[in-house]
Length: 287
Image (cartoon, rainbow, N blue to C red; front, side, top):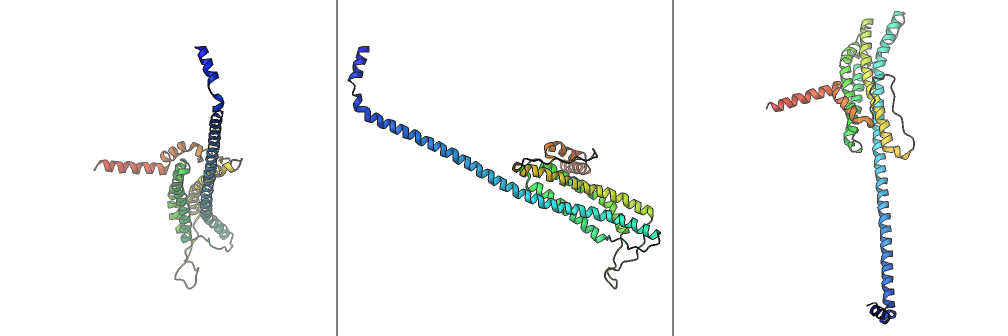
């Protein structure tokens, strides 16, 4: 058998097949080369597509961040202006009382009820704009739901504090007579006594604390949005605020689930929301 195979090997016209074998080898080599080129091109195309997506995603992040910066700037301006207006009124009252007791003529406080309502309205609009933003761009991080809740809590607390402050402040603020012979003429105004001013100070402190709480959440929000949206462009990360009072709640994305639960179940807004939902469910079940 082996002799037969040996003879067949030597008798087979291998030389005549050399061109054919060479052609096959060339085709195989060319095919492999083409496949390698195709694979490399596909890999480069995938890398280029990934890079384009990353670039476009980064552009979108920058657009969102610019929108956030504008809204936060407006909110901070509204918060500071509102808080300052309330503080300035009680300060002016105390100063007027001290100057009067010293026998000096002093201008009456400059605060007016219409302006107070404008300040409060601007604050509310700025807060609502931030809430709307967290709803509009919730896709960028699930923790924005926590920030939406935090802003709602802050607005609710401000509203609770504003009600008693408003009732007292508008009675104490000088009022302009719209039918007076000249613009800016005031109705007769009497300086409040010390006990009344002290009551206003208590109401002012409660209102300012509620306003400042909203300001703290804005600060937390800006820090998280910087780190989340533009942090990859820089090596530095901004540290979160650390209030001296351990009771002050700091909003943060890395603990958003726990904070959301806290806001929804341990705040005045959360309890009101839960009570309202419970009443609605009970009403629906009773139908």
